[in-house]
Structures are given as structure tokens and as C-alpha cells.
Length: 265
Image (cartoon, rainbow, N blue to C red; front, side, top):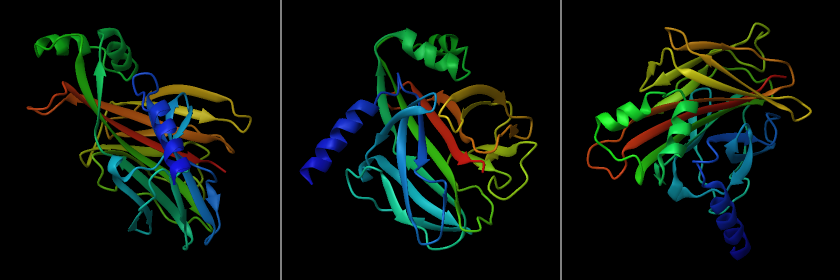
């Protein structure tokens, strides 16, 4: 137990740097498994689809579930586990794993780091919004929550993704493992259960040789976007909401991060 906790503390200390390492995602060790086989997944924190694994901590977890055929099975991990998710999927079909964190707080000592983050995530008017609210441009706080999903093929991989009720999330409108996605994978972005139109979506694409390409696109008026895909490549989609924190909180801003990972066979 002690070595696991020491490893967990080391990993969490190294990865709890959202100001420098932005994205958070689920990385299955295998995106395609047979029913009854072990399924291990890392919770990753980093940028440009590169990063380090986080240990499992129930105190940092709001939801962690495996969904198949509309049935959700809550996951209860062991504190300090790496990979964070270690389970067995008994049924064939498309498996959707979701992990939602509890809100965490970050302090910005200078304006520049926050401004760089906001600009990158498509909030170029953030300084005007900060000043309009009468808040200082240094020594202020932001809370952030992660809403992540991974699509995993189990056996025949039949089935479809669907909304899970998270405050913001991606929903794949086709099954990347069995549907024809030669023209792209259609994806819906939701916020509070409604389509989120004209929102920036960042696409990270990893080729079999490990090389990562990054691109930006936007959802249409229906909150949908067509993601170009290539066979054998792994994908991470990322979209962020930045809104004023609720009254009475220490934080000035609140960010909500939607992410989804999948492989195209």
C-alpha cells in the first residue's frame, strides 16, 4: 500500500498543473477488446495528446461509469491505482466509459498565463470581461471540472453512443468501430443537455508511428461537427466552456472541459 500511495502522490503532484498542461482524457491501453478480457485505462493529463497518468482517487471523482446498451455500471477504484481504471467488460458491444472529476481550484498569480489559456480555448475577449466584472488581473482563482468519455470496441462492437447527462459532453453520432466513417465521424457537442453551436473543437490525432497532429474546427448551428478520420489513428476531441463562477465562490471563473477519445480501426 505504501509504495502505491507514494507513486500516486508523485503522479498527482506532477500532473496537477492545468495552467501548463491543459487537456485531460481517458486512454485505454487497448481500444478493442474481447468480452471477458481485462480493460485498463489511464486518466491522462497533458497537452498535445502527450502527458502522464493520474492515479485514481475517489475524493476527486464525481462519476466514473461504464455504459453499454444504455445500462450504466458505476466504477469504484482503489485509491492510488495506476492505471486508474481496471475492470472487465462481460458483454459485447460498444462500451462508453465516462469519468467526471469534482471541481478543482487553480490560482493565477499573473494575468498572462490565464490570458494565454483563454485565447487558446477561444475566449479572446476575456480581459474585457474580467475588467467589466471589476476583478483584479492577478492573484485570482479559477475552478475547473473535467467531463471525459472514451469509446471502446468489445467483441462485435455494436451499439451507439448517447448523452450521459454530464453538464457538457461529446456524443458520437456514428460508431467509429463498425460504421462507415470514410467521410468523417459526426459528433454532437452538448452543454446542459442542449446542442452547443459555433463552439471551438480541438482535434488531436495520433498516427500509428506516434506522431500527433493538431487542428481546430467549429460546431455548426446544430452543435454538430464532422471530424475527418484516418484508419488506424487515435483521436482526442476537446472543447471548453469558460463562464463566471457562481456568486459566493472564491473563484472568479469556472471552466468545464469536454473530452472524448476513440480509435478508428
